Structure formats: C-alpha cells, structure tokens
Length: 371
Ligand SMILES: NC(=O)c1ccc[n+]([C@@H]2O[C@H](COP(=O)([O-])OP(=O)(O)OC[C@H]3O[C@@H](n4cnc5c(N)ncnc54)[C@H](OP(=O)(O)O)[C@@H]3O)[C@@H](O)[C@H]2O)c1
Image 1 (cartoon, protein in one colour):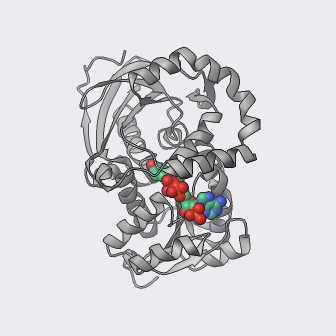
Image 2: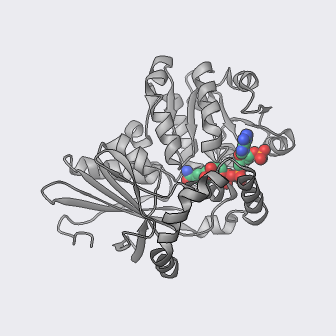
C-alpha cells in the first residue's frame, strides 16, 4: 500500500488471459491502474501483461503454496478464471489464508452459496468475499435492493434479464454446467428445483415486451443475501422459437438431466464438451460489445398484493463487467467491510448508476401487475 490513494494499492487479476480477464485488465490499464496479472500459464498471461506494461505472476490453483505466495502481498484478488464451480474454492482458501479480499465474476449459484457460507471466517480474517461483481449480478442485485427499499415488506421478487448477444467461452462452459443442475427458484428462503420450460410469461422491459422463461441466475443466491426477500424467481428473455421448444420438450430435460449429470460432471466427457466450446465460441467482438445493450426488469410484491416495478438498461454485458469488476475492486480496497457480501449489500442500490451507460426507471405504482 502506497499512501492513501486506493488506485495505488496492489491487487491481482487471476485468469487475466481469458476473454473476460483480458477485458478487465485492459479496462484497468485504460484507467491508469496497475493490477498484477496472473494465471496458470506463462505462455498465455505474459503476452497480455507485456502488451499492457503490467507485472505478471504464475500460480496453479491446485498448488496451495504457490497460490499463497502469489497473493501474499496483494490487498485484493479479482478472480476471473471460470467456471468458478471448478476454481473458486482454492482461491477463497488462499485469500482467507493470506488476508486478501476476494472478488469474482461468477454467476454460478453454488459458488455464491459456498462463499456466503464462509462469512464468519471472512469476518474473522477481516476480508471481503464478494462473488458476482460482473454483469452477473451487479445490475440485478442493485435493482433488487432498490425495489426492496421501496417496499420493505416485500416477500416476492422477480427479475427478468434480456442480455442480447453472444456468450464468451467461459460463460458457455459455466452455463453448460448450470444446465446439468436443472431449473431452480427460491421459495420460503430455500432453493427449490423448478421444472425446465414451465412458467413462461411476457414482461414489459423499458424498450419492449418480451417472452421470458425461468432460468436460475446467480440472484437466487445474491438477492436473497442483499434483500432477504424469501421468494425469488429469475427469468431470461429468449426467442419465441426457443421458448416454444423448451416448453414442449422441457419434460425431457427434467427427466434426463438427473441421469446425465453423473455421466458428465467432472468426467472426461465434460473435458470434451469444454474443448468443443473452446474451439467454436469466441465471445462478442469489440464492435458487438460497443453497440450492444442489456435490459432488466424487476418487481417486488408484498403479502397485501402491493408491488413496485423498475427497469434498468446497461451497456453490453462484457463491457459492463469490465467496468463493474474494476469499480467493485477499488471500492472494496478503499472500504472497511469484512464478511461475505453481495455487491448491493455493501455498495448500495445506486452503485450500478455509477457504471457508465446505466439508467434506471421506476414504473408508476399503478402500472399493471405482471401477467
Ligand atoms: N458475471 C458476469 O457477468 C460474467 C461476465 C463474463 C464472464 N463471466 C464468467 O467468467 C468466467 C470466465 O469467462 P471467460 O469467457 O473469460 O472464459 P475463458 O475465455 O475461457 O477464460 C478462462 C480463464 O480461466 C482460466 N482457467 C480456467 N480454468 C482454470 C483452472 N483450473 N486453473 C487456472 N486457471 C483456469 C483460463 O486459463 P488458461 O488461459 O490457462 O486456460 C483463462 O484464463 C466464466 O465462468 C464466465 O461465466 C461472468
């Protein structure tokens, strides 16, 4: 730590050679920040670091001593190496050991749940564990918190996301792992399975109406933490043909996913799927990131049937992630928090409005209730 200037504090981006890790490193560099870039492969990390003129380190997640050494002198680790169901545990353990804050860009429910379960350990160590500082879940978490403040006795929360555009390789791998776990909602404070293809409806976003279907976003974990609203459903907008197919054939997914899961999860077949994804999925290019945007709608309702709704528009998801991940890391470095926290729980509902391109609009109180 050099002086009081948070921009001078030392932090490290692990997974800096990936699609999103590189975008975040480039954004930090653009802001004049000097994170240390890290990952498991010198051949992949070093060229990014040399191009940006940043320091770099190599450490394997499966080697606790080398990982501990790599982060021993940093204030925070921004973990970008996913799927995080495979990678978050060793990094959280190393951060607890070294006394470095941990942030990541996951959207994976088990990763949020595991991090939140370490709240007491993080408090004791005086560090923050903050999963989900990218597009998953900063905008949705902030919108959920905003609505919960407008209706403090809300008992149900619905969030729908229309994030148009291509996915990156890591997002596709993480989504494939999530697909195997089937549908989920939160009811009475607990995660419950929910049939794939059920619950399709229309939602009026700030630009237009779209068909949405329940999909288990990370908010099923993070919004429960930041709002304590016990009933949460998260939806994704999809093309009507996709939704029609899922509605018709969802029963097959519900029947076969539990059988397929042990055959694929952490087996050579999963490795083959990952390789297939790496060869074919490259993520949105600079132009797609520049012109893209994302739309979010959310609604809270209390037991008397009163509701509040709001919409949020943001930059394209990967561009947003680069900005929000850097902003969240600087906030944590500058702050006095400890424990396992959702982004809006620490930074407040308006944090999203500090990210360029984000606009929020409350719908009138008498707006038609969602169908
Ligand atoms: N929250 C959000 O909105 C948001 C936005 C973007 C991405 N993400 C998530 O971020 C993750 C990364 O996505 P991406 O598209 O950037 O992926 P990617 O291009 O495939 O890059 C993955 C990175 O993780 C590293 N990695 C993977 N497994 C590792 C392991 N076992 N040990 C060490 N390093 C490992 C890779 O290292 P090598 O180069 O050595 O293979 C690479 O640097 C995904 O889980 C994705 O869902 C979330």
